[in-house]
Amino acid sequence: MARLVDLSHLIESSPEGTPDFLRTDIVYEDHDAGAELYEQLLGAPRRLLRDGEGPATEILTVGTHSATHLDAPYHYNSTIEGHRAQTIDELPLEHFYGPGVVVDALGREDGDAVTLEQMQAGIAAAGHDLKAGDIVLVHTGSDRYYGQPDYMAHGPGVTAEATIWLIEQGVWTMGIDAWGWDRPLWMQAQEALERDAPGILWAAHQVDRPYSQIERLTNLGQLPKTGFTVACFPLKIKGASAAPARVVGIVG
Image (cartoon, rainbow, N blue to C red):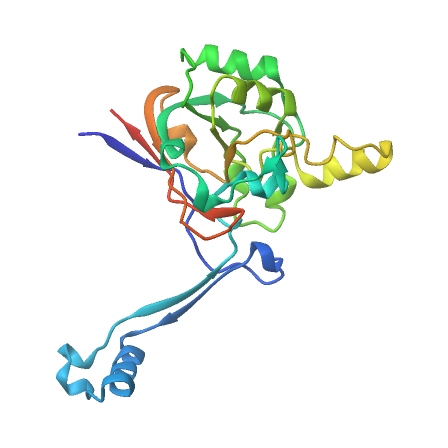
């Protein structure tokens, strides 16, 4: 039997103060409310239901970039390599199921770079022979900050050069257990403003290549470095730049 490792964070209501585009809100309707609903919709009194209970339901309002999710090329720019960028519903399912490799980036300070050389060394250290269709996961340990107000301020980031190299090897999907694939936004913005130069802010996202990121992974330490499969199918949301996903590592 294969061992399944859950690489997705729990979806739950966001704390107060979370920006709207990152918010998740869940309204829970219990069995009593369900019985009232059936009476309103169907005219059927609760005495016709087991224990007088109707269906429990939830109303979920979720940002496409909250919790564990996959980014589509459209998230990065409206055009990629001169063509209209694909949205999440237009991406082939084959991109979200494949052999995985974990690159060790533990012990890095916030804002440290995962360079091209370090990416190559991490894949070699994992004993993995990188092939087209593989899914590369960067293990930073930043998932320990998930749910905290300063979560997005923590973690290292993958450089544009390392990102382009992965894409050139045929890697369509790559992921990280930090808030984002790039280093923290506030660090990028500060440097870009100080230098008054493009190509710094959101550099790895905007490499003008069609690829997909999995952001806000967890439990990467429970995976072997190689020899497992990743399943990371996003919800099929029309015209969306991203979608939540239940990401699973399949070992054995």
